[in-house]
Length: 399
Ligand SMILES: Cc1ncc(COP(=O)(O)O)c(C=O)c1O
Image (cartoon, rainbow, N blue to C red; front, side, top):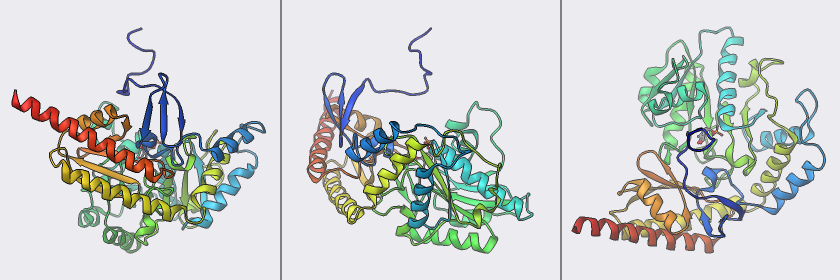
């Protein structure tokens, strides 16, 4: 055996966390890190949230797994709550974001199939997108670095430039089934899609009989200060993929659709062994209990403003390190002037965790439960990290 027993697919930081408390992670050596990466937008309610811990442990003492061949009350309940809170009429639960996207893509293709148009299977997506690592979702994401070496690209995905709605219109053919988009691109570098563009995509879908699919795996579940990011634009999709924050750290996802869009998803055409299992459903319901509490999302919006304004101040102070601040809600990106991996290391040296993204951006995705004091603490650490890096760059240049 060479190296570790694990596939070498991840470049891991030399840090192992033993436990977490709210916005903090504590290493096996007892060092505390302020977690503004949130497990890449997963830890929506921070670490060890008491309501989530009790929901999970109570369910664990009852029943862990029941096949989808039987009724699962927690699943019906969470499904109904998601339907009540959104455009959707129907929900299919999955174990991950990529699986939610697979379900979304299959739902769109089956829709056209049962409508008598099996030739309509192509999906238009956008440059910089990230939809997961399964064979279909790497094709949808269209990034060469994730496609290379994995054989022929799954057929039926056409990519156009980010926010290039004219190009999307031109790409529509009689074979097009749907348009797939993240309302706020996450891994692509925290790029919100303008409201006008989402509205135009909705119109294009109406005009051409296409389905609009939103990928809210990263930007959903309160991350932008509304339950779903598309609510800011007042544009609803036909199908939506959700994951990450809905499980608060428990692996789960969901594909939501209108009755009309889900018309092809009939008995036996799709399935999952673990999706919608009682443990995941207990946690998903507990996450919604908190996120849907009166005032919770308004408080996310208030804290997001505090963080964004503070970051703008740091960017002004260190323009050679941070060029600009982008994003919305608690989904913010530092557009770096220095390499984002170096900025990330400088922040990690200050015991602050963040997540690199495309376009030389460093993502900040703190728990929605982050406190004002923690935001101020994070700003102090980012300032200290930026200063350290600026000094190091100046010293290297002077040599
Ligand atoms: C927007 C988006 N879609 C899909 C996925 C894939 O989710 P998962 O890693 O749970 O399969 C991700 C993960 O980062 C994502 O950010």
